[in-house]
Image (cartoon, rainbow, N blue to C red):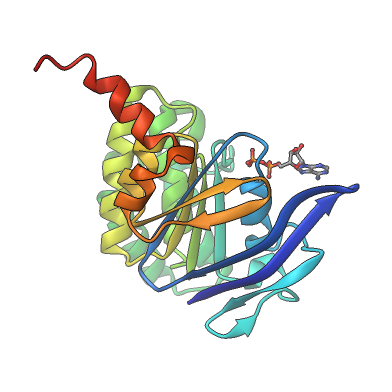
Length: 240
Ligand code: ADP
């Protein structure tokens, strides 16, 4: 579905991405781990069309999308504070993409209500963004993204600002939605556990390069990922 080849990007002689290769099949979710500043956001922005690479290509279903403007790509980029329209209520925020597509009113009603229910927002439809919690706002932004059935969903540290309990709930909900809506996606995080939970493939961004692991086991066994160190850390607190 997605094919990234020889992608490179520098900002003022500062090389951020170097010869990135990546392919992602339909209905797969790739988690990308990496330190802050390692270029994860830059990669996602290039895929979404918000940045342009110096070299390389991005193909979706065999066609290069580099010259396609962001709003025509059917690739949605969501980040931590993805903003809602403050003057539109929850229903209108979620329905927005379908209205832009000028879909019939009845279809907009049905599809939006169905998605609001699936997101556990059925009883929040008429509230304004300032009247709902952080976790609920995030559900609304997922709704806005999912309603247009994107070919590729790019999630950039989406749960970074949530408290641990809400974060866990959102991880479960997002996993359910990914399965239900057959999403192909990329999930950026610096949390090892979250990367393992959300993706069925894992890659590590380091020194401008993206290394994709063949299996979770290979990922855990590799010293550079930090997974093994984390497991060892928790083991010392578990009584034999
Ligand atoms: P990550 O998402 O892994 O934290 P980013 O892709 O946001 O990393 O940033 C990678 C590096 O590129 C950082 O050093 C950042 O300062 C730099 N950078 C990002 N965007 C720009 C820009 N528009 N101009 C110059 N430097 C940038």
